[in-house]
Image 1 (cartoon, rainbow, N blue to C red):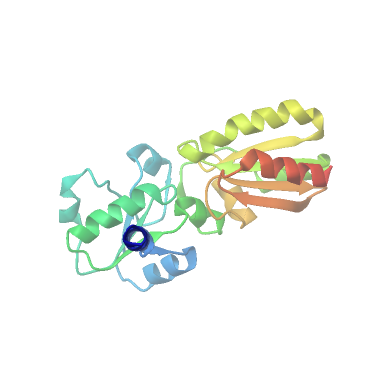
Image 2: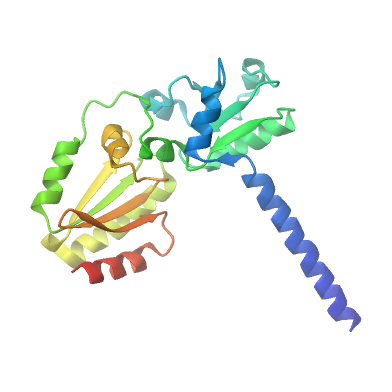
Length: 235
């Protein structure tokens, strides 16, 4: 009986600790709408792009500066009494940066949930150096000329996006010409991603049948299985 009570108490403690840790890691996450709204409320918003310099050079939210937690001098470039807005490709690096800011006394830090993928995916504008890539007209022509089109939206710098590629190769072999697969990257076609107004994070998969969306998925969890099911229903 005593052992059972000890086990129950320990389980409750562990559950509470994990919940508190989860709350700490996610409490600063806000949607694109809230992130944008709070930025607009600031005369000189402090927007931090926590990605690499290479990523930042190719595209970033207008007004952002490129800082990383490893740069100890970042504290000198920010005002801790004012809100700070942080984003990365998804939530990884930005959440780490937000925790670092909090430990240094910054009281109001907002992390863009879904990162720049969500920002562009919801139609928000960014600075970009992209000179090529699919246009909306090109994309619509692909949809019109293929019965089934699977669209993979992501970034070459996104770790999870890279894990989608082997799945796509397998599907190409399994379905051949019956399935057209289109890969759209932020670095090449940000305007097209914005025009879709569907993407909530990278990677994002969309299946079209005769030009109509029949399936959408964010992330890579159980990807092959759910795609197989979606394709079986669409064929």
